[in-house]
Image (cartoon, rainbow, N blue to C red):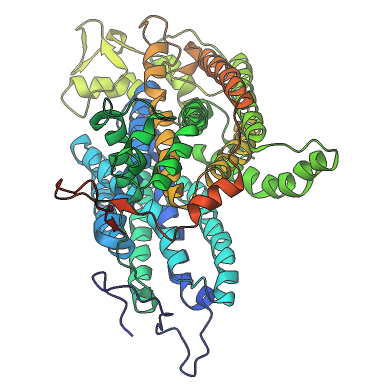
Length: 611
């Protein structure tokens, strides 16, 4: 049977798809339909993490960006990846439906990845190609992010007991698909990008291949989705609650600001009870969301901490010992695995051991208390990173710069994030003679020639940013602490938004939560600019051995300490919404909104209600 067209009315009867058996016995939705969606999600997450995990390193080693510039550019891009889900959700709810949104934006996503591969051709790396590619990718990955899991949930009929049971299992498998994609990305893909493949161009072609793998993976994701299409239940767009909520807030704050003064809460100006255009239960539901705005705002500094895993943690790791034994080195971004490990291994421990421990002693932890404890773990992570940075620098040898001799002594100890040719005086000699590109960190001090080349004594270069003898595995504790904080702050925050809002408002809180993630990523930008404001005393220079990255971590600890203090003050006065109050709103099958299209309604007439 062909999938339901987006322009058709959704039937209230159970839909018979091709995966159903002919004699009325339906095949398992979990095993016959959702595997196509799970493969799509696995491939997409492998694609995203495969690119994002190596992006800072690519910018530093191939585009010659400083640590600070690479972190800023990554933060801007990462923030867009968490803003575009709002666009993707709105498109799906309002115009295209989830199926078309996923398919169209996945194709756009693939186009951006192909462009990124061309932008990473060795010797021809081009910002003109790379930046359009990155923001096309941001639109693609963010646009499908809110739709894939919900499209998977659409395949289950809640009125079917077997489907209802399998639906929970689907989300478990969906979560594992995400983490499996991350596992492959932070190991195999990250290794290829950083070290290349022997026989396929080696290290020089590493990023080209490392970005080609995500492009191929995204192509497979689209293929799996298309192959599964005949079995999918495809629902038409159902309207955007977020759009209606924004319109209602605008009416209360602007249109009717001076019309109604005597209301219990300012949003109630938009309620039909006070002459507004919105059903009162809808207004009350939005008011519950507004009640949670302080915790949403206070999550922004938390996401600032979280974003350090892809920026400063990686900067730090680049100047640490990456070797395992004598013959193998791990990619810098591989340490992100320990964040995932912490979540997978410790989440069940918290649910089955830690939380019941407090409950059995009549001291159950509330959702707000768990989030606050998570903030504390994020502070510990930043403090641990700061202490490690002090220790790392103490185990780095200093050498007085003496020209070519210094380079030859340290070239094999260079940071993994840097290209050693940018510190090689001989490369500058070739450039001066018209052969090759100018190394970024060398310059001439005189014009004395030695034969047909500039004298080596006329060339100076910055000292090579050398690695420490401290193993990168000492970063594991800070990644584990961030992962632990996610279990408490990120996961529990989603639980809070789910339990403290009516069902029709949950898409709004999910959207706002993604927005705070973007804002937290963008908060890195002013932080980096401030700590590097003094050009003679940068805290995050190209060579971290000459800077004070530990001060940056200390500043973030202080920010989180202030955030935690404000959070505790707010949380102490928060009153949880009672379940029966939410049930009163959820009694309606859907939110009804008054549409006074003609502006000519007779005041004595009953208002006309529309779905």
